[in-house]
Length: 395
Picture (cartoon, rainbow, N blue to C red):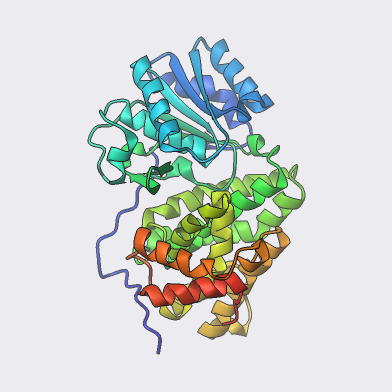
């Protein structure tokens, strides 16, 4: 019989979340009143150069100014932040000495804002803090406003950037936002492709959070609800971006997915990091990896896979058979990818087969996941990447 490694009695778990979350349609309209609890009148607003020119961003800045806040804007490039971009944002905040840091944008913008706010009161450059719990002092007040429904950065203690030697992650409670404001209205203008990629990122957070050896009943609760909401609403938001109900539910799902990050992501995110070589958006890499890593881990977590399958809509007798339940879950995620125009294989992306072994080596050496439920060696990853290349998802 397969080994079920998940045992909620076996260890002490940690579940962390922002102090306060305000959620709802037009929640940003009351931003002036919301910020009264923070003493500084200066706003250090992080966004990117595209979002800066959108109507929601312009209205947001106008509202802040009308409430007599002094607003200074740091508009970054529209891409995953590099270490130089992050250090520039840190210096921007340090030069102002005080203020409320607000990150308005997708995950990259919010991660920059998180790092900048945290390091405002800590010396040194960003790469010095890569790792877990290396930020000793709390920084400036931090408010996050997501404009996508997927990354969950508004509720996580992690920030990712491209360091000089690859992906770097800072993980610390010092980066948890003091306040997250989730307004579905600002996501309506998000085009179909980023809607799909960020939505699948949220699904990856939820499913990987459940698969993780660090999963616990609190993670399980928020992750299962996120999966159910994404299963029902992502395709609608993708096909009809103006459907406010679907956008509303995807925003909820993304925030819940962010809370699932408390369990620490598993092998799917490691695989996604290696796909950066092909300059894919992070959510797209996670989407491509997800069904393959679900298949890879299924035998180690049969009961968990049953619960994932149920959240993905399985409600017949197959739920009693762990193999059939896992196959349903894997195929449901595969089908969702296909509907969203996301490739199932590296081969379909024009990647040479020989590249699979190189990626497996990189994944094993640079992005280990000891919390992955199935223990693995390099040969296991080589086989996983061969299946990722061919698109083989047969159970």
